[in-house]
Image (cartoon, rainbow, N blue to C red; front, side, top):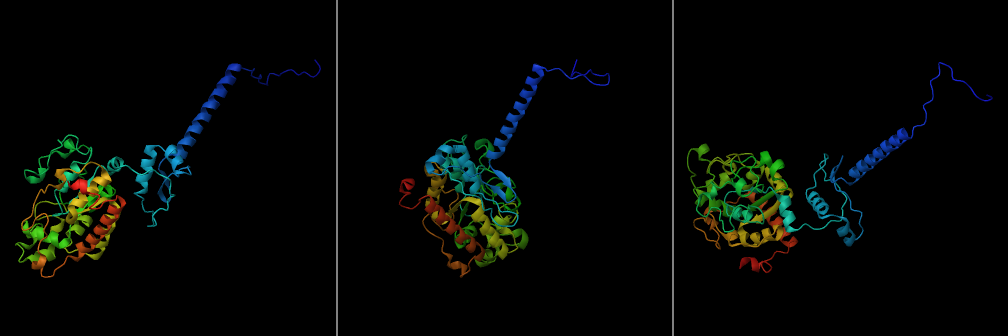
Length: 368
């Protein structure tokens, strides 16, 4: 026929049109399209995002507080605030300049949840009783009775199975016991940073308390004898809190711990201890302001003040709850290393108290 051509034997036949095959191809294309969209959305809304500058936050698209509250879930808001409070340093040593997203404030319950497992850094003679206050924060120890008092019968509750009583609540990495006086150097990054709770005491008061408690931390294993005087004792164990925050010594017994390290504290260690205190701890309390510290603890992490918060596990000799030690026997000796750290602690305590509106007047219900 005109315009027609015949297929030769070398030519392959053209495949006829198949409706079934065409629909399958379209279905496959649509499936791939959906997968691509899902992946794109997942990447766009992932939280957090890793960038070359470190960990950054996902910026909220809202423009008003009302819009932010409706546009962000509680979980996203919680994660953003938690990440913002733990901004990491970049490889250049400078803090990441992350965008500042709108965010809802953390509730005390969420703040406590974010802090778990709590890493109690226990400086000797700064308040073993703090363990009771931590245990009785809401939800920390669901398997303990409400009237339980840790250490009420002596021995600081060594027989207590802390993980069974308080599952997931307390960190014990790098320590022989969750409440001991181990130095944190070996596990600061993995266990303390972002989870640290600590009580600190006026250094000379802490020294006097240790002196009257069997010359606590004196390294007799090194000297082979007791201290010749209070001043010698003070000069050797000075910088105890700085050592706990910067060295890796375990507490083996009463006299073998970071505070009994015979090598004196150096200036770089003081700077490191101050840096860690300010950047790695969620709560810094002051032993000399015990009542106000307990009020601050509950203002930040929830729960009502309890009588057990004010129970003294280990009352020292020659002192009372309301009286300080007479430090004249120190003959003017001062602990310069711990003094510098204590000044930083006082500054942090003041900042935290202002943040949560904690004053003696506002805390009167807590003290009753």
